[in-house]
Image (cartoon, rainbow, N blue to C red; front, side, top):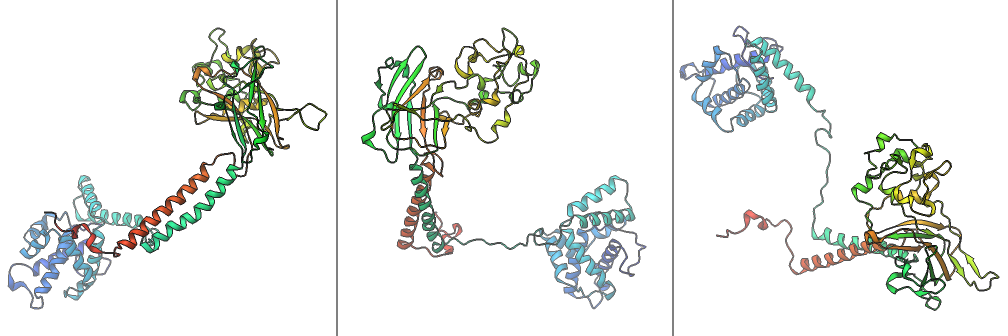
Length: 532
């Protein structure tokens, strides 16, 4: 779209369809002829103001002609001093183009009025296409095209490209959408603080209240092996249990006790339920100082193997399951492989038994809890029965010497292969925790309440925790519409409300004691007195 020089044979006048660049350079010749240093060549109708307008127009046309032809270059160099000074000015581009944009008549011959209009539009577009024009001109020179006709075709092509890249004239693309920006004044900011407090305080109070309605108690049985042998009982240290009940009946509460059966490695926990626990009642196991979120631990799993696929030996060995991938003694695949499966929690909990039920023919009453529906929805889809043959796989190392549902001391045999799709405890464990202290659901009862009284819970102690200096506990808990017993969310809302009130009071006092004029220009940095 740049204007370059054409042959002098192109006529000055003609139809509007004549090429603009041809007209531009003839127009330059026309202006130069009338601004030549010889004063007698100036027509009487061209005054000093007319000369200034012509100079501005010539500067803009020179801007549009970065590569004049050799025949005309000497004439442009010999331009009058008035034009040269205009071109050399730092702001010559803006001054020339602004003159073109503001003046619709240069008091020049009428035959050139249409050309002047087109030159004014072209000059305005040149601001945005300056670099592209120089590039087009450079391409023409590199391609060996130095005549005006080739330059004219290149300019027309560049103009079409520019028209295609021009964004649509819409409010969105031209950034004319309506916008609103608040003006922060004391009259608007101070009520906002108190409004936030007014909203957050009751929400936090409601969340905290219902979180406190959840009943929960924890019994730490890590050191149960030090308890006296059954049937003798010893009181559990007060630091090993914690009751958080909203309607605790102290008259019906007795400290928990324990006893140890070394033969079956069973810990007998005797505990009191001071008040009725409405359903649903959940039984969790809790571990501390156990970092399931370790990077190597999290990655040590093969999902395809758990989905039932018989993953090849070469894929398992050295794969994601390492270091629990292949048995070095038999060169068989561990199933399930990986550190997570190898370290599955294998303590077992019996159903709590209510002792000495008053007004009942039975001395004891079992509170039945289910081990089903303890996983998240969709978790079961990740586990299928294995397609491996029993002679292709071996249990993980920790399973080979264990007892219970995860104990396979004699390895696998036909009909005796672990099936992850039928064991929800395994699914719960395989969903790793994000913090070193966590609890996982073991049992639940969604139909019956847990009546107050003295209960016995038997725990088969299989899982060692001394190797990582951790502890293990059993947790009984109810729930509400806000979840379990976790007052943090409610306290967070209350803290935000309190902070908003505090800030509102501070800013209100500051505004009343020492008000500040809105929009005071004296606070601007350049209006401050000189420190010197």
